[in-house]
Image (cartoon, rainbow, N blue to C red):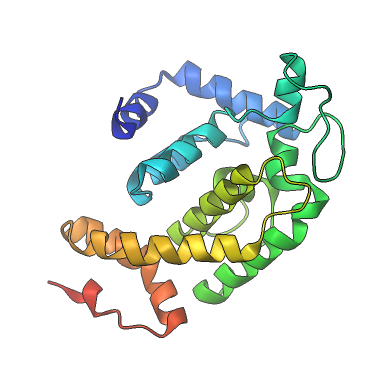
Length: 216
């Protein structure tokens, strides 16, 4: 099934289904009811993530589909539930992607760099890492994409004892910029506006020409 069809199915989920997933995240994060709503992250994934891999990774996070040490342990596929990086037991998605202490420098670097590009201060929060947005600070598609890429790098290094390299994240972000940025400019006015919103800050940070966004 094409990833676009999967996302269309997600967008058509019954309200009760979405509420189930929202409530589950709310419970896992220890927040008050109504705090989490993954619908916006689904919509932004459809609008701003062009590649099937990026969309799939966003989907896996929002619906908690990653095979974490805790899940594998409960299924009898792993001897323990410990995080391979810090050895904390019951390592679920929240721990593996967001709150593991070994990941702190990684996320701080990412959000400091994106903050420079956007000329704003980005606070590192668990919700931002998990969903690409939170309710406490301004949203931006570049921030959303940078977060999704950050999670992809972590997932690719799942079993490693050391934290992933920020160079891997930076290289992946720049690869998306050079490969996907021009695609927005060729997809019509609405897509071009979305591409400009996302990629112009990167182009300006790199000191590169941004005229491709000025096509009438």
